[in-house]
Length: 166
Image (cartoon, rainbow, N blue to C red; front, side):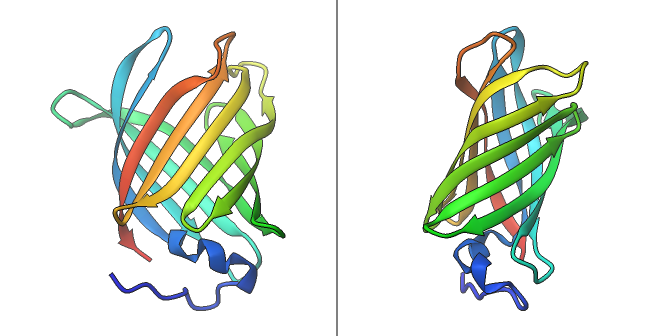
């Protein structure tokens, strides 16, 4: 696939230009005290010419036949590139959690670590997190390790998404 820098993309975002697209695919999840599950996911990275990417992710829980059972998690946020291949990312979830992430990028490999979080009074408390994003065989790979509700940091969800547009 031939890739071009999206028109009007702020120059600071050129290292992340490969992400600007709509991505769709499937993933799996697990965590103590919940049954392992499969989900469909859509992720959208976009821009408006300013020095940040907008981010939106939504998912649907699937049954064993791959049919949608119900909506799953959704999150929205902003990605900002800083000097020395540093990323600052803010994400808010439909579950009442907002997070600040710090990380680095090296080509199409991105690693983020939870810096700070806020949980609404009725939301679960997330105490640590690590996110990995990468371009693997022309697909967006995503993995999220989480520590929440007294559990230690461990694998939670992962997915592989195909580029739909961008």
